[in-house]
Length: 420
Ligand code: AMP
Ligand code: GLY
Image 1: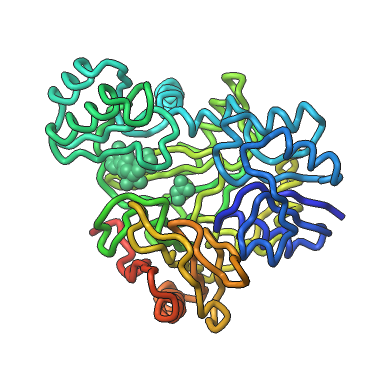
Image 2: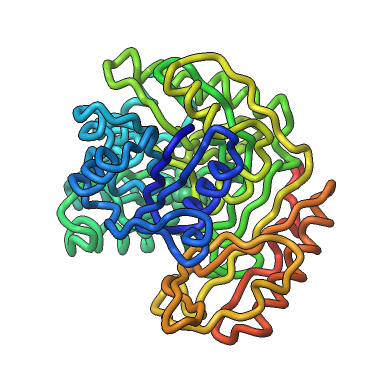
């Protein structure tokens, strides 16, 4: 029987904890630092996600058999390297492999070397050269800061003036610190998230999901960490999924292994269906949030056994519930800009579906918000529309009783088809 440690404090980690709790081979789940929802299912450990030494000491002292890392920060700091050095079993990429997420320039150059379909791009550290390149190209372009910028380092520019403003703030005003930018061709099409468990050249695909990055209905408003998700995704046919696996996910894993930086962990492909062809928008080196909250509940196989098989490079079949799982994020008004914390949360116990806590805490005996994205309300049903109706009913129920929160009401409403 396993003692498992999960690192993180969001909805993604809540879903990971829950899946591990369902695993017959898991005795005890710990979570550092956890949140109010996670703490009802796992033993909380008061260590921040970036205190790698304290986490490794805890894992050693508590005889943790497996550690699963949620967020990118500890991965890009080298938590996996340190745990492995101390002989601790951990699921995630090493610091150098995690660069597939932490450095957009690294990811783009790797894709270029290996012919992996993605938007054409060039990397710059000089404002004048970057601007000249933008002005020589089409009106629309995408400007990306080359580093971790908490999801805020991407500007989809509608024209040259907007691109210039983004280049100015990233390269001249150093908005996210001194760094490079990647200027990318704008790709049109519906996006989907394809997470695969990976060990070197072995790739174990998870179910495809769809995120909703914009804050408001009809994909309006600023980009967020994700306002809702569902899985499966009707427009991603089996043929498209297979193409994405064969032309993107497997070749990237092989490219990294061939270049001496083998990837172990979750390789997250943020993909776009551009004129019928799946192409890469970005890679992440971890489970997506909120996609994980709709993908892991669909997994019928024993999650801990699956992770074990991946770590040992063994074959394993992953079984999925065919239902559609859909989740709607309830966020604090103002998010992703400034927002209040401490909003009192009521009504969670009265809903039919489930809740994954994202940013919650218990203060003086009351459940309150602690982050911008507060919780994800989820439901499942044989069809997307039924799952949506159920989740929306539950979400509205909680909103009514918890003033100060908002949600999108169109998650799953307009499944984009390939033809529209
Ligand atoms: P990223 O952080 O790279 O995922 O970018 C955030 C969002 O910007 C993506 O989810 C897309 O909606 C959009 N985006 C990024 N790159 C492109 C591109 N080359 N073409 C069109 N949209 C893009
Ligand atoms: N849902 C997007 C992400 O996890 O980065």
